[in-house]
Picture 1 (cartoon, rainbow, N blue to C red):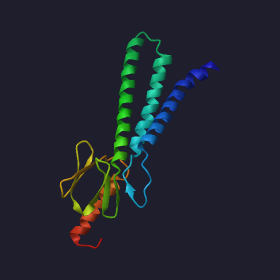
Picture 2: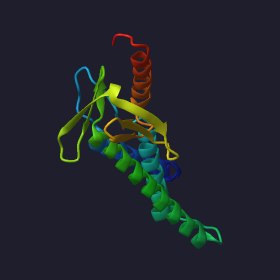
Picture 3: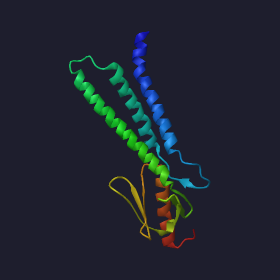
Length: 181
């Protein structure tokens, strides 16, 4: 019976850490509900990275603390494991930070109106007809530029970003053709 516990304990630790990571992401990145607004919110890739990253950190931490290695180069293996553990923990924390930034920006739109949170906490409203350009940066972010020079940067992996870009492109075509909105 002991071998079952020895076999399943690392996976249980990984699952516990994955659950903790999911709970932390849910608390930090859960946007408030909106009515009739389409919101930009963390996407599936963000959630997967946090949950799976937390699970791997838990699994590696368990192996480092309780399992170890019996091989001749065990010390070198454990040093590499610690480096991997730190790298995964850092990447998971960065993903949590990105999720929080998406939620704090609180970007939402309805029809031609786009709103987002300003630096001082006030809401800033913009007309999507005032968009003069949109491009994808080398980092994967999407920049939306307005006639007044203001630029909004969006994480291309966030949920709702493709729909907003599609709406801007469609709106630009309607404005150019003189179609009623």
